[in-house]
Length: 300
Image 1 (tube, one colour):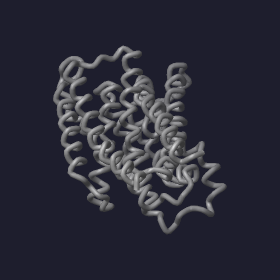
Image 2: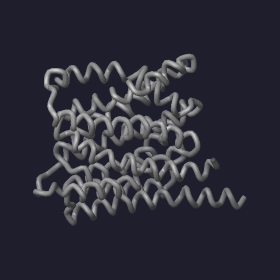
Image 3: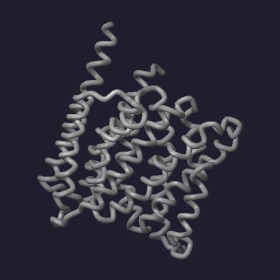
Image 4: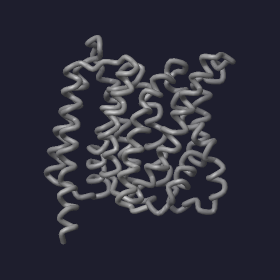
Protein backbone atom coordinates (compact mmCIF):
# COMPACT_ATOMS: atom_id res chain seq x y z
CA UNK A 1 0.00 0.00 0.00
CA UNK A 2 1.12 3.56 -0.69
CA UNK A 3 2.68 4.88 2.57
CA UNK A 4 0.80 8.19 2.32
CA UNK A 5 -2.55 6.38 2.08
CA UNK A 6 -1.55 3.78 4.67
CA UNK A 7 -0.65 6.34 7.33
CA UNK A 8 -4.09 7.98 7.12
CA UNK A 9 -5.85 4.61 7.34
CA UNK A 10 -3.74 3.71 10.37
CA UNK A 11 -4.53 7.10 11.93
CA UNK A 12 -8.30 6.51 11.70
CA UNK A 13 -8.13 2.87 12.86
CA UNK A 14 -5.94 3.79 15.84
CA UNK A 15 -8.29 6.63 16.75
CA UNK A 16 -11.23 4.24 16.98
CA UNK A 17 -9.29 1.56 18.90
CA UNK A 18 -7.58 3.88 21.38
CA UNK A 19 -10.62 6.14 21.66
CA UNK A 20 -12.58 3.09 22.83
CA UNK A 21 -9.93 2.18 25.41
CA UNK A 22 -11.15 4.71 27.97
CA UNK A 23 -14.64 3.23 28.23
CA UNK A 24 -13.13 -0.27 28.45
CA UNK A 25 -10.93 0.91 31.32
CA UNK A 26 -14.03 2.30 33.03
CA UNK A 27 -15.91 -0.99 32.61
CA UNK A 28 -12.89 -2.98 33.82
CA UNK A 29 -12.72 -0.83 36.97
CA UNK A 30 -16.22 -1.99 37.90
CA UNK A 31 -14.69 -5.42 38.58
CA UNK A 32 -11.00 -4.88 39.41
CA UNK A 33 -8.86 -2.28 41.16
CA UNK A 34 -6.79 0.04 38.92
CA UNK A 35 -3.54 -1.82 39.60
CA UNK A 36 -5.10 -5.12 38.55
CA UNK A 37 -6.46 -3.51 35.37
CA UNK A 38 -3.03 -2.11 34.45
CA UNK A 39 -1.16 -5.34 35.18
CA UNK A 40 -3.70 -7.55 33.40
CA UNK A 41 -3.65 -5.28 30.36
CA UNK A 42 0.11 -5.68 29.94
CA UNK A 43 0.30 -9.35 30.94
CA UNK A 44 -2.39 -10.55 28.52
CA UNK A 45 -0.74 -8.68 25.64
CA UNK A 46 2.63 -10.15 26.63
CA UNK A 47 1.31 -13.73 26.68
CA UNK A 48 -0.39 -13.33 23.29
CA UNK A 49 2.73 -11.89 21.67
CA UNK A 50 5.17 -14.30 23.34
CA UNK A 51 5.20 -16.80 20.40
CA UNK A 52 6.07 -13.95 18.00
CA UNK A 53 8.90 -12.82 20.28
CA UNK A 54 10.32 -16.34 20.63
CA UNK A 55 10.21 -17.00 16.87
CA UNK A 56 12.11 -13.76 16.22
CA UNK A 57 14.51 -13.92 19.14
CA UNK A 58 17.54 -13.72 16.81
CA UNK A 59 16.36 -10.26 15.76
CA UNK A 60 16.36 -8.98 19.35
CA UNK A 61 18.14 -5.58 19.28
CA UNK A 62 20.70 -6.19 22.03
CA UNK A 63 22.71 -3.10 21.16
CA UNK A 64 19.55 -1.00 21.56
CA UNK A 65 18.33 -2.75 24.73
CA UNK A 66 18.34 0.40 26.85
CA UNK A 67 16.16 2.22 24.30
CA UNK A 68 13.81 -0.76 24.08
CA UNK A 69 13.39 -0.77 27.86
CA UNK A 70 12.85 3.00 27.94
CA UNK A 71 10.21 2.82 25.20
CA UNK A 72 8.49 -0.15 26.87
CA UNK A 73 8.34 1.30 30.38
CA UNK A 74 7.25 4.78 29.36
CA UNK A 75 4.86 3.76 26.59
CA UNK A 76 3.45 0.42 27.69
CA UNK A 77 3.82 0.06 31.45
CA UNK A 78 3.57 3.26 33.51
CA UNK A 79 0.59 4.74 31.57
CA UNK A 80 -1.31 1.44 31.84
CA UNK A 81 -1.56 2.05 35.59
CA UNK A 82 -1.92 5.83 35.58
CA UNK A 83 -5.03 5.85 33.37
CA UNK A 84 -7.06 3.39 35.52
CA UNK A 85 -6.00 5.20 38.71
CA UNK A 86 -7.16 8.53 37.26
CA UNK A 87 -10.42 7.07 35.93
CA UNK A 88 -11.47 6.10 39.44
CA UNK A 89 -12.05 9.82 39.97
CA UNK A 90 -12.89 11.29 36.55
CA UNK A 91 -14.94 10.25 33.52
CA UNK A 92 -13.63 8.30 30.54
CA UNK A 93 -14.54 11.29 28.33
CA UNK A 94 -12.23 13.63 30.25
CA UNK A 95 -9.45 11.01 30.15
CA UNK A 96 -9.76 10.89 26.36
CA UNK A 97 -9.66 14.68 26.12
CA UNK A 98 -6.54 15.01 28.30
CA UNK A 99 -4.80 12.31 26.28
CA UNK A 100 -5.18 14.56 23.22
CA UNK A 101 -2.32 16.68 24.57
CA UNK A 102 0.23 14.08 23.52
CA UNK A 103 1.42 16.10 20.45
CA UNK A 104 2.32 18.90 22.85
CA UNK A 105 4.63 16.63 24.81
CA UNK A 106 6.04 15.13 21.59
CA UNK A 107 7.14 18.63 20.59
CA UNK A 108 8.59 19.36 24.04
CA UNK A 109 10.43 16.03 24.40
CA UNK A 110 11.54 16.11 20.77
CA UNK A 111 13.04 19.59 21.18
CA UNK A 112 14.70 19.00 24.57
CA UNK A 113 15.96 15.43 24.16
CA UNK A 114 16.24 14.65 20.45
CA UNK A 115 16.84 18.22 19.23
CA UNK A 116 13.85 18.23 16.89
CA UNK A 117 13.21 21.64 15.34
CA UNK A 118 10.70 23.73 17.29
CA UNK A 119 8.88 26.68 15.71
CA UNK A 120 7.23 29.72 17.26
CA UNK A 121 3.87 28.47 15.99
CA UNK A 122 4.33 25.18 17.84
CA UNK A 123 5.17 27.00 21.06
CA UNK A 124 2.02 29.14 20.74
CA UNK A 125 -0.01 25.99 20.08
CA UNK A 126 1.45 24.41 23.22
CA UNK A 127 0.43 27.44 25.29
CA UNK A 128 -3.11 27.44 23.89
CA UNK A 129 -3.61 23.73 24.63
CA UNK A 130 -2.05 24.06 28.09
CA UNK A 131 -4.60 26.76 28.87
CA UNK A 132 -7.36 24.33 27.91
CA UNK A 133 -5.87 21.64 30.15
CA UNK A 134 -5.81 24.09 33.06
CA UNK A 135 -9.49 24.89 32.50
CA UNK A 136 -10.28 21.18 32.52
CA UNK A 137 -8.27 20.65 35.70
CA UNK A 138 -10.00 23.45 37.57
CA UNK A 139 -13.50 22.88 36.17
CA UNK A 140 -14.37 20.10 38.61
CA UNK A 141 -16.36 16.97 37.90
CA UNK A 142 -20.04 16.45 37.38
CA UNK A 143 -20.59 17.32 41.01
CA UNK A 144 -18.28 20.35 40.88
CA UNK A 145 -15.52 18.59 42.84
CA UNK A 146 -11.94 19.73 42.26
CA UNK A 147 -10.05 17.04 40.29
CA UNK A 148 -6.46 18.26 39.95
CA UNK A 149 -4.59 15.07 40.95
CA UNK A 150 -6.28 12.78 38.37
CA UNK A 151 -5.60 15.39 35.66
CA UNK A 152 -1.93 15.51 36.64
CA UNK A 153 -1.73 11.71 36.53
CA UNK A 154 -3.16 11.74 33.00
CA UNK A 155 -0.73 14.45 31.92
CA UNK A 156 2.13 12.36 33.31
CA UNK A 157 0.87 9.33 31.37
CA UNK A 158 0.65 11.40 28.20
CA UNK A 159 4.17 12.72 28.79
CA UNK A 160 5.37 9.11 29.10
CA UNK A 161 3.72 8.28 25.78
CA UNK A 162 5.64 11.15 24.19
CA UNK A 163 8.96 9.85 25.54
CA UNK A 164 8.19 6.40 24.13
CA UNK A 165 7.04 7.72 20.75
CA UNK A 166 10.12 9.87 20.17
CA UNK A 167 12.43 7.10 21.40
CA UNK A 168 10.92 4.56 19.01
CA UNK A 169 11.22 6.95 16.07
CA UNK A 170 14.78 8.00 16.91
CA UNK A 171 16.34 4.71 18.03
CA UNK A 172 14.08 1.75 17.12
CA UNK A 173 12.61 2.72 13.77
CA UNK A 174 14.41 -0.08 11.90
CA UNK A 175 12.61 -2.86 13.83
CA UNK A 176 9.39 -4.19 12.20
CA UNK A 177 6.29 -3.12 14.12
CA UNK A 178 5.03 -6.63 14.98
CA UNK A 179 8.41 -7.78 16.24
CA UNK A 180 8.98 -4.60 18.24
CA UNK A 181 5.59 -4.99 19.96
CA UNK A 182 6.37 -8.63 20.77
CA UNK A 183 9.74 -7.77 22.29
CA UNK A 184 8.28 -4.90 24.32
CA UNK A 185 5.42 -6.85 25.90
CA UNK A 186 6.94 -10.34 26.13
CA UNK A 187 10.65 -9.97 26.84
CA UNK A 188 10.58 -6.64 28.69
CA UNK A 189 7.22 -6.29 30.44
CA UNK A 190 5.73 -9.76 30.98
CA UNK A 191 7.59 -10.42 34.26
CA UNK A 192 7.05 -6.93 35.77
CA UNK A 193 3.34 -7.12 34.92
CA UNK A 194 3.02 -10.59 36.51
CA UNK A 195 4.76 -9.36 39.67
CA UNK A 196 2.51 -6.28 39.73
CA UNK A 197 -0.54 -8.52 39.47
CA UNK A 198 0.59 -10.47 42.55
CA UNK A 199 1.14 -7.31 44.60
CA UNK A 200 -2.20 -5.89 43.38
CA UNK A 201 -3.93 -8.82 45.10
CA UNK A 202 -5.47 -10.32 41.97
CA UNK A 203 -4.81 -13.96 42.86
CA UNK A 204 -6.24 -13.47 46.35
CA UNK A 205 -9.34 -11.61 45.15
CA UNK A 206 -10.16 -13.58 42.01
CA UNK A 207 -12.84 -16.24 42.30
CA UNK A 208 -15.11 -18.14 39.95
CA UNK A 209 -17.72 -15.40 39.74
CA UNK A 210 -19.73 -14.45 36.65
CA UNK A 211 -19.15 -10.72 37.23
CA UNK A 212 -15.39 -11.15 37.52
CA UNK A 213 -15.30 -13.16 34.32
CA UNK A 214 -17.21 -10.34 32.63
CA UNK A 215 -14.60 -7.92 33.95
CA UNK A 216 -11.84 -10.15 32.61
CA UNK A 217 -13.58 -9.97 29.24
CA UNK A 218 -13.43 -6.16 29.27
CA UNK A 219 -9.72 -6.21 30.25
CA UNK A 220 -9.00 -8.79 27.54
CA UNK A 221 -10.62 -6.59 24.88
CA UNK A 222 -8.63 -3.66 26.22
CA UNK A 223 -5.41 -5.68 26.13
CA UNK A 224 -5.84 -7.42 22.77
CA UNK A 225 -7.09 -4.43 20.79
CA UNK A 226 -6.21 -1.34 22.84
CA UNK A 227 -2.71 -2.53 23.76
CA UNK A 228 -1.28 -5.36 21.63
CA UNK A 229 -2.85 -4.66 18.23
CA UNK A 230 -2.86 -0.88 18.71
CA UNK A 231 0.85 -0.75 19.55
CA UNK A 232 1.69 -2.78 16.45
CA UNK A 233 -0.26 -0.33 14.33
CA UNK A 234 1.30 2.62 16.16
CA UNK A 235 4.84 1.35 15.62
CA UNK A 236 4.03 0.84 11.95
CA UNK A 237 2.66 4.39 11.77
CA UNK A 238 5.88 5.69 13.31
CA UNK A 239 7.89 3.77 10.70
CA UNK A 240 6.15 5.51 7.78
CA UNK A 241 5.48 8.97 9.26
CA UNK A 242 6.80 11.45 11.84
CA UNK A 243 6.28 11.36 15.64
CA UNK A 244 4.14 14.51 15.41
CA UNK A 245 1.87 13.02 12.74
CA UNK A 246 1.56 9.74 14.67
CA UNK A 247 0.70 11.60 17.86
CA UNK A 248 -2.16 13.48 16.16
CA UNK A 249 -4.20 10.30 16.48
CA UNK A 250 -5.06 11.91 19.82
CA UNK A 251 -6.98 14.63 17.96
CA UNK A 252 -9.61 12.08 16.92
CA UNK A 253 -9.55 9.91 20.02
CA UNK A 254 -11.51 12.37 22.23
CA UNK A 255 -14.40 12.27 19.76
CA UNK A 256 -14.62 8.48 20.08
CA UNK A 257 -14.13 8.64 23.86
CA UNK A 258 -16.89 11.24 24.28
CA UNK A 259 -19.31 9.27 22.10
CA UNK A 260 -18.78 6.16 24.23
CA UNK A 261 -19.06 8.26 27.41
CA UNK A 262 -22.37 9.79 26.34
CA UNK A 263 -23.71 6.33 25.42
CA UNK A 264 -22.72 5.20 28.94
CA UNK A 265 -24.50 8.15 30.55
CA UNK A 266 -21.60 10.53 31.17
CA UNK A 267 -22.06 14.29 30.86
CA UNK A 268 -19.66 17.18 30.25
CA UNK A 269 -20.07 20.59 31.89
CA UNK A 270 -19.97 23.75 29.77
CA UNK A 271 -16.57 24.67 31.24
CA UNK A 272 -15.19 21.23 30.40
CA UNK A 273 -16.43 21.56 26.82
CA UNK A 274 -14.71 24.95 26.55
CA UNK A 275 -11.46 23.47 27.90
CA UNK A 276 -11.64 20.57 25.44
CA UNK A 277 -12.23 22.91 22.50
CA UNK A 278 -9.28 25.09 23.53
CA UNK A 279 -7.00 22.02 23.70
CA UNK A 280 -8.07 20.95 20.21
CA UNK A 281 -7.70 24.51 18.90
CA UNK A 282 -4.10 24.61 20.11
CA UNK A 283 -3.33 21.24 18.53
CA UNK A 284 -4.85 22.24 15.19
CA UNK A 285 -2.92 25.53 15.32
CA UNK A 286 0.46 23.82 15.78
CA UNK A 287 -0.35 21.12 13.18
CA UNK A 288 -0.97 23.69 10.44
CA UNK A 289 2.72 24.55 10.31
CA UNK A 290 3.82 21.05 9.39
CA UNK A 291 1.10 20.88 6.72
CA UNK A 292 2.25 24.14 5.14
CA UNK A 293 5.88 23.02 5.23
CA UNK A 294 5.02 19.70 3.59
CA UNK A 295 3.09 21.54 0.85
CA UNK A 296 6.07 23.79 0.13
CA UNK A 297 8.36 20.77 -0.15
CA UNK A 298 6.01 19.15 -2.64
CA UNK A 299 5.98 22.31 -4.77
CA UNK A 300 9.77 22.33 -4.83
